[in-house]
Amino acid sequence: MRKRLSFFILGLSYCATRARKADGFIKGKLVDTAGKQPIIDAAICVLQAKDSSMVTFTLSSKHGAFEVKGLAAGDYVLYLLCRLVSN
Image (cartoon, rainbow, N blue to C red; front, side):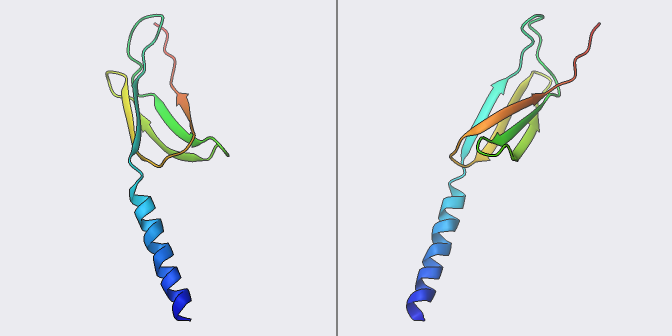
């Protein structure tokens, strides 16, 4: 029983250490190519590449900039949702 308990504690500390390593990030700037204007308040969704489950999301700033922090190593897909406005 003692060996199992030690292994279990070691496994928990490994998972906790690995969880702290989620220091990846994605950042960028959204610009309308036609008008060269920033895309404001667009939703940027970060999805797992393997199953398309949502990891997190953020909104672009008034300058079109966005940043997503705290990502673990892996493959992601970015999905952009924005409202088109015509003048």
